[in-house]
Image 1 (cartoon, rainbow, N blue to C red):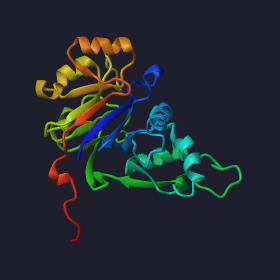
Image 2: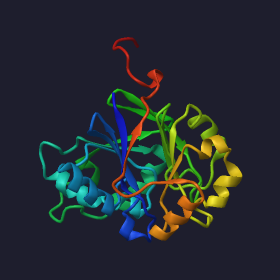
Image 3: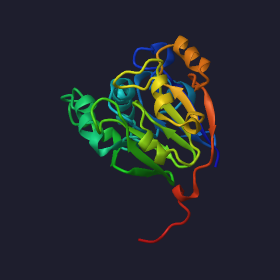
Length: 256
């Protein structure tokens, strides 16, 4: 199994020229799981893969991360072969927020007869989820209110923090097996996002060496982060990943 991470966008909500922060985990060159679905991210996905995503993990419900779902609803609902099959993985605590943010518009179709979630297969989760024979861990991050933002980890392979302040106590476990850590970072931190000084204060050197930074504010910010010795993701970049640990892969069927 050959895994890779493709960055569809690397910018924050203001850096539209960098694309909304999102990525795709690829397996053997094919899309396995899309992470977040902002408007720009969905466009980038469709332009590259020439087909709609089949599975999406949502980190949180800010519109630069979920704003593509409305467009995806229409394209999916009116396709009989895809309706109800596109998997949306989201922490159970996010479900009421997603409902309020993207799914609760009265009469999602003017003619009636449809619910927003009819187009998708919504899978609520807590500790994590199975997808295509692989187990993904899910963990809370520090972004705005508690339990409203969640990262994802594939043991020995990848950690994607989503939007967050530093979370050293969480990454001590979720990133303890040599994983590449894609981490939210701007030059100057704020109450919702990590700054470079925050990472240097909170994380040990060994972990900082495995970071690849995204969700920054401009190309100039990216240059500053690189100048401090950090690896910085670029829009469209593809990064090879280590194989996931055997414990997170299905080995055999059967059992209770």
